[in-house]
Amino acid sequence: MLFAGVDAGGTSTRVAVHTASGARAGYGTAGGGNPAAHGPAAAGEAIATALRQAIHGLPPDSVTASVAGVAGSDDGFAPVLRRVWAEQGLTHSPRLVSDVDVAYAAGTHAPSGTLLLAGTGAAAARFTAREIDGVADGLGWLLGDEGGGFWIGRAGVRAAVRELDRGSPGGPLVELVTRRFAVAGPPRRRADQIVRMAQADRMALAASAPLIGQAAELGDPRAREIVREAAERLVASAVRVHRAGPVVLAGSVLTSEGPVRRAVLGLLEGQDPARCVVTARDAAGAASWLAALERLGEAAAVRAHPRFTC
Image 1 (cartoon, helix red, strand yellow):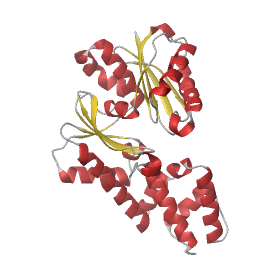
Image 2 (tube, helix red, strand yellow):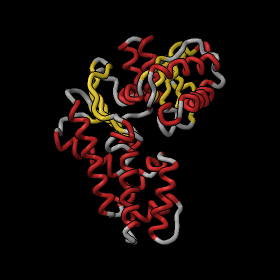
Image 3 (tube, helix red, strand yellow):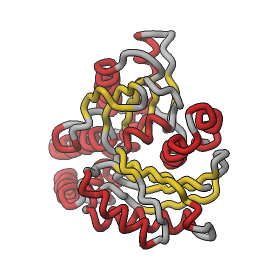
Image 4 (cartoon, helix red, strand yellow):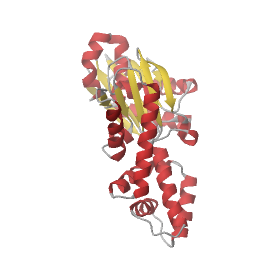
């Protein structure tokens, strides 16, 4: 008896297959699987690529349950997943949930608590009996997702472009952004090139988020302001929905060591030193664990949780 789990986001897709004990039997990766960002067809192909890798050499009919956590999806994406599963010879279609569900399960087996997610996007969600019953932000890159990777990257690149527009030589932030976009020439010319490239590919802004952390570590004052503001906005979202239980930090912005993670931890611990704050581990494994939970029962699934998510 095998279980499959999908963690599909804006920049990458992961599929994990586990046995009932939590031992990993297969794993696959691919590009972004968010249908809102890449379109349903491309997202489905990314998930199919990762799934093929994960089940390679395994009997497909042994996969008895699957959960797919897909960012940017709605019920209309479920038929795409059913087709992908059928094409790979899997007879049990996956249960479609949000990336928020699997991110929370990647940090804890507790039925109730709060998720603070900051990857490309950002959201906070309160869970009760493993069901979402309160959400803050998660409003998308254009109107929300405050403190997430896109928000941070856009703020940093915008600050760098404004410095170049003023003819300023800038500091670490301008230098890192200029290098990231591989532009050269007088300041205004560099600004124009960066603007055109960002307009052509908005995900380039999200990919620039780590640079703002690096610039902050190098002492750039504007980068430090952006880091502080990002942390404050993220924590404000978490506090708005939190009631009890652990707070799970998830998404690359909060699971990677860096100034935003440190600032968020400092704010959360400063508000309540007794609050339990944990970091999410493998979300694809967590999705697989959610699939197993339906078959194994609570007690056995809780015991196996660390193995699924390691």
